[in-house]
Length: 246
Image 1 (cartoon, rainbow, N blue to C red):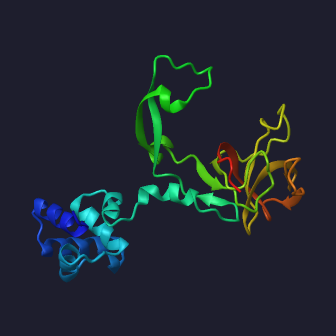
Image 2 (tube, rainbow, N blue to C red):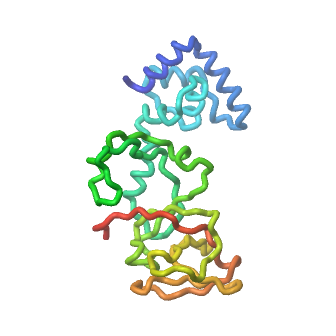
Image 3 (cartoon, rainbow, N blue to C red):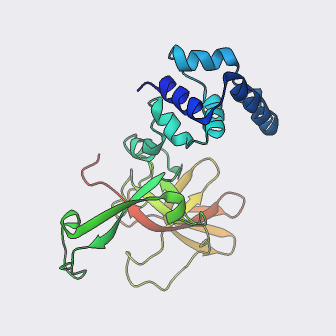
């Protein structure tokens, strides 16, 4: 079914006329302070009957007036908002930056009775039930942020490859100068160095922040003043990377 026909079907089931939708859109536009939310009768007729594609503001208005999920309405118009994280992961860029979180996560809910967590297994064969969880529910209070390690950021290579996605805990901004036993236990930090971001080990000496690269990295250590030249965004607590990437 084409999007306009779906929207017409929903409107008619709700008992709304074109004039009702226009009136409601004016109320929403007044509340939000933007005339872009207004849907005139002629425009609604074009959307329903002539295949016109509404603007994002008008899609939002229709979703609110019809009590629909706006993500679903965007998908009707072949705009897959829920896939943005997966599509973005395929687009490699040079600079390290913060990234939007996924709209949903697929998590195992029930394992096969024979699953032994001590053994290496093919997970897809050991999970009896999967379920989609919204990212906002999985990360209940928006505690974590996501970052992308740019293709030009070689500070932590080969331990952390360029093109990796990292999970950042912004509540852990204090630099730990010692206390680890090996390089895998040493904290990695996501740092805002004003003109860009980077990801590396750190050492704090008063107001001097030392960005320490991996011993096998081609990069050199950097000394920056905090908070003028650099600021810790948070500690990296998770890493997703793909082997075989350039």
